[in-house]
Amino acid sequence: MQSTIHLINIASPFREGMTNMKRPPSGILYVGGYLKKNGYKVKVHHINYRDIELVARKITNDSSALFVGFSVKTGKQVTYSALMSQQIKNFRNNLPVVWGGIHTSLLPDDCLRYPFIDYVVIGEGEITMLELTDYLSETKLQIEEIKGIGYKINGVNKINAPRPFAKNIDQFNQDWDLIDIKNYVRTYSDGRLKLDYITSRGCPHTCGFCYNQEFNKRKWRSHSVEFVINDLKKIKEKTGINVVSFDDDNFFTNRKRGLSILQELKKIGITCNWVELRIDYITEELIEQLVKLDVKSIFTGWESGNENTLKKVAKGYTLEKILEKTKILAKFKTLSADASAIIGFPWETKKDIDDTISLALKMFETKKFQLNFNIGLYVPYPGAPVSLDAAKKGFQFPTDYENWSKFDILSGEMEVPWFTRKQVNYYTLIDKYFKLLYIFPSLKFPFKQFSYIVAIMAYLRLKSRFLFFPFEVWITDRIKKRVYKKLDS
Ligand code: B12
Ligand code: SF4
Image (tube, rainbow, N blue to C red; front, side, top):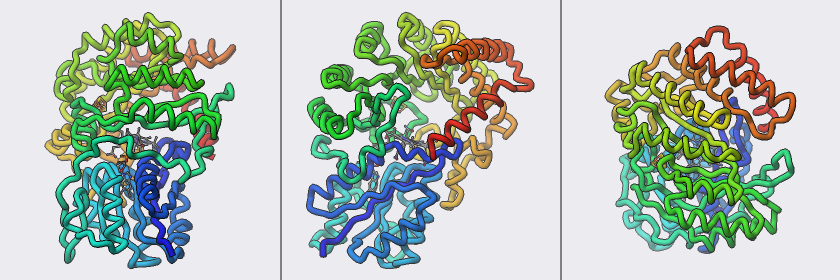
């Protein structure tokens, strides 16, 4: 009997309890696809955290199971993957458990400490997992020869030499036959169908709060334009999608390639109405081209309104650039933007944070009602250089898997030494007021007119920093909760 490899991605609650089962489990579709191409039988389980016991039982009852692989991101997914790994070991102790993915790669020793994890795969998973699978199915490979893995010898962690990145990622593909792709197609209110898709890995920049320098070593690797178009063409035939959204770390690292993808997609009836763009990549010419290609909104992380913070997080641009680029965006009336900043870095004073609030208000005055702000609170992530500043201030990552589920500053359970809970609540409220400044283009009478009134009130409140009795936020919060609940059901 041919053995079966079970790969798991647990959708765990992250926003208002929402699990987001509509986002493809890309990591295990790539890894599973490569194993399948090389002759192995693979089953992908993209599961809701509520179903972990049920699926653990099913897998351990499969006598052909060779091992169980988990894809793990930092946060709640660590806790749920640990709980499920433990259950697997309880039901069938000799079934190997392998962890891979970003969290595992950034803290491999930490993961290996758990008794229910046998192997960790560090970094890009495809080739490493194939070699480990060969080893587990008793071919001649020696464990010490497999680059990019960790394991235990007599209870002591052993991490092998790192695996270099693959030279050409077109040899890897997301195997869409491993899931029912139709479950991942989202329907807009006007009937258009959308899929999230990955075209490249990594980013060459140095932002100090990002996982990229450690995980991708500043190496950007991309699929060719032909690869992306052929794959999406096939997906379109199967599902009828006409919108795609890219989950790349930095889609426009190569501007020519990025534009070619959008142009070729338009020819086959797929548009990309939202793209991510570093603020310093913005030029009038580029935005003009994007608008012609039906892009309606961009996402840009401008990050801070404080010059010292911009320098310390190595963004590579100044405050002046942010306003200059906002002015360019303001010239395009059909284009809106998600504009994201981070406040509360370990070194930031109240005045530094206030600089960011003031700059956001200036940006709003430059491009009124069309900037969807996200003024997020800084959270230290493993592998990111700024986490060292956090450690100097006394911050520590959780040391047991249970506490990773609290690793979310908004949950009310995570504490950081440089902020009191009162400050967290205050800045969360500031963020909520900023969100009210945005008018969704799809809104119709009378909701549009009502939103304008709320936005003007929010602007006046933010300008004066008068947040007493925030009834506008309470009302919109209730509406949002209802929408999220509906989306998750
Ligand atoms: C889509 C996405 C999501 C989706 C999840 C989709 C899904 N079904 O899993 C949603 C919206 C739910 C989400 C949520 C969050 N996300 Co997110 N997300 C992404 C995004 C944009 C793409 C992920 C992806 O598919 N990448 C492509 C695949 C191919 O890469 P990969 O997963 O790393 O897989 C490779 C290797 O890791 C490895 N591998 C992966 N799995 C496995 C499994 C095995 C067994 C093996 C051997 C190998 C292996 O092989 C793969 C191929 O080489 C990334 C950014 C990015 N471009 O990666 C951020 C990113 C992963 N998210 C991030 C974060 C912080 C979050 C949140 C915590 C945000 C928040 N504050 O709420 C939540 C937490 C989610 C949770 N519940 O735990 C960070 C992760 C940092 C970290 N240390 O883990 C990233 C990197 C963004 C960033 N720049 O900071 N996210
Ligand atoms: S934050 Fe964005 S631009 Fe900066 S390193 Fe990460 S992916 Fe690159």
